[in-house]
Structures are given as structure tokens and as C-alpha cells.
Figure 1 (cartoon, one colour):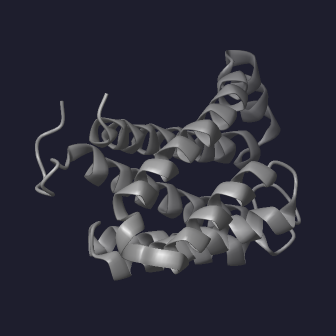
Figure 2 (figure 1 turned 45 degrees about the vertical axis):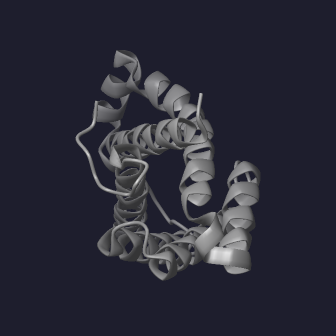
Length: 187
């Protein structure tokens, strides 16, 4: 299998990770954003179980996708691109229980977006959405949430959805590109 084929599959992994993370975010709104009776209905229907299984799967897929996204632009971005890649990769693994690692992950995504802008390989708007989503998620997540259903919870979920839309968009762009750089129709 060629390295280009592997990069394309990594792009697909980023797309699937983005979709799964958005689904997890939306399920979080349902589970934590509404009243107790609605929450009990979701728990009994198994959606909470899906959320619990989808989040780690999406975390693994986003790491695979990140490798392909970085590989596509690694020669163009140089040391700053490598630093942003490593920051996102390492902190995504560590973020499973640490607020500081989560903040550093968002910082890494913002820096990765900057390196995407500089490389001019991915769509400019997607790179900007990645930066805005990462910074917004970091800022909103840094405040302590007082209660489920608060405005801050909706801000965190909205910012995280923006970040994951950008990750999926970058992955889709990578997946649909040909070796020469033109966009082609997906399989």
C-alpha cells in the first residue's frame, strides 16, 4: 500500500472521528442538558452506552487522522508544524483525565491550524475554523461548570462541535485529494 493511500485513509479516519465526536457532544447535551426524566429515558435506551463507547473510538481515530493530516504538510510546515503535531498528539493521549492536558491539546490544535494556514495545503476556511474552535474550546472549558444545563455547558459543547467540524473538514479534504493535489470525488 502506498504512503498516499495511507494518508487518504487517515483523512477518512479524521472524518469519522469528527462525526463521532460531534455525536458525543450532541448526546452530552441530551444527557446533561435536560431534566432528570429525559436523562433517565436516554440512559434506559442505551444512548449513554453508545456515547461511552464512541468517545474512546473517536479519540483513537483522531490520532490516526492527525498523523495523515500532518504527513501531508510536514515538508512545508517545518519545525513549527512538528511542534504543533507533537503537542496535539501527546496531549490528546494525556487529556483523558487532565484539565491541563486538555487545554494544551486545544492549544496544539490552534497551532496546527496556524501551520495549516502557512502551508496552504488545506482549505483556508477550514484552518481558520480549526483555530477558532480550538481557542473557543480552551477558553470555555477553562471555566468551572456550575451545573448541568448552564449556558457555559452549551458554550463548551458548541465550541467543541466547531473544532470537530474543522477536523472532519480537513480529513475530508485529505481523503478526497488526488496525489497531484486536485480534489476528487470520494469513493
